[in-house]
Length: 305
Image (cartoon, rainbow, N blue to C red; front, side, top):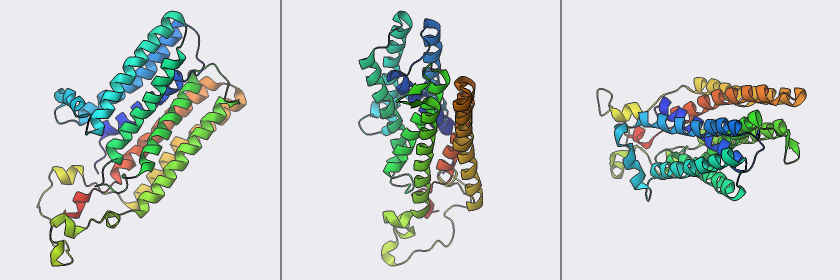
């Protein structure tokens, strides 16, 4: 499928933002001042808002975005929008209380953390619910989205947090574990994606054209002499050799380089600068991973074309 930059930016940046909000809600130790609370909350909420706004550029009529909220009963896109607004509204209240009193309400923070994870899950289900794209239609898609969101949040929280240890381990070690777990799940996702095809869903050229009852159907000539919306948006060709290179680049930037920076943070104790560099590198790796997520996807409409 066509890898739209706006959607790639949206899924990566908003995932990191909601992952960071989840860690803040769970009480990750942060500098105890109103100014620090303001800027940290602004960063977390800003990542989410910027990511969500970028997704509007993928809409045919961005000015009608509000209509998406009305379809929450049947659309994961609508549910993701509703959950985003709800989570950010509660987080704004949480942040205001934090700035005004220096206190972070545990119950409210826990609710926000749960909603943040559910919001990332809803984003993933926009794609995982599509039976027409076999590589997306599995539970690993959602697990990877949530894992990457939380891993991004942990790396970012380690950048600005005051705690050197969380859950009995160094924050850099925790970040390293989160990175390995997230990318390990992605490797499993890639392995499944490489082995699944339309035959696994019962679809072929015969079902696509409606001529399967006549026998085996083969494509003799394309139905159009030129490109149309479906061929542009639903069919994106990428060579296997290029895909392998891009996968290696995404793992290198998203896992290996951040892991090295996390190790340097552990050795030197300079968590702020090294974990921030780890976060930037991870984002670069996730942009490559998310580009491949769309570029390698094969939509059932390609059976017709």
